[in-house]
Length: 97
Image (cartoon, rainbow, N blue to C red):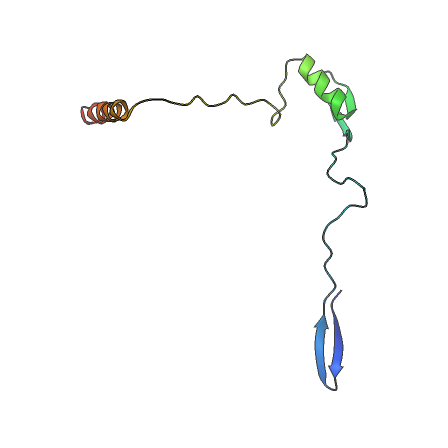
């Protein structure tokens, strides 16, 4: 709540509330709970535990987006001459259309 404070006769300042950083009262606020709102899985049952929800999905062959393991990118190892030849070939193919 914003309020006016008189600092001298006829002079006022706006007193703004002190902004406090968002902090939890929990000792370890970074921990994600296993509890979730009741959610229906593919078997028609409602689950309140993330662990059970994921286990049922995994048993049905589903993939939870965001938790899949990504394959590492293959590093291309070619010489400067091979790259130039490849680029030249691509340019020639493009121009021949």
